[in-house]
Image (cartoon, rainbow, N blue to C red):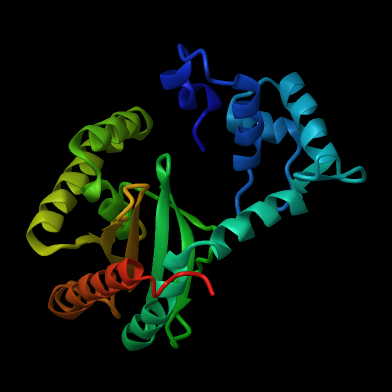
Length: 270
């Protein structure tokens, strides 16, 4: 997880930026689906926020119901206030209603996983996830995070961004990547070329060994965001020739259908 100080560099001269609010939200971001509970010390280490400030903010967030505190363990977990906000947001997204039946159909056809995600800094957060019928699938779920630069879904998001915005993200990726930067840059550039030529991006063993994926972006009509869909699974089930001959084109078709349903209002909440 990115250090908090790096996350506010672009806003440090913005007089309208409320640092206390930003720090409180950053503390909530520190929790991931893989976590149990976190101590103030662990939160401080993840966010880069000084521990005395973390202690005051976790106390406040607990009073407001956004965190729950265990006195016995001296640790925090996300409270019902955060869960209510998250589920309200997901429930209001017509995109999910429009996409899910099509995603499940593709997951069943491929025997792999099909997901919908949105960018959060240098990660993709899963908003919807469907699994095929085979036992061996990726252990991901709604709320899971995957890296933006090496996954099919992340590369699809990057490829669809305006050039200046993608360059901004790449600058932050370079700071974080160290010696891996050259490979990461080459992979993203390859994905951009694939998207322009084929309408989809691939990741073949670059996120996890023996895992292949294909991603397709969707630019929402209201211009509010770029989201992306992917189909991913073990490389023996999704070999590159099958991705190019069959799955990539089907995923492009899926996204086109979702776009049409959103435009016609078919995906609006009931």
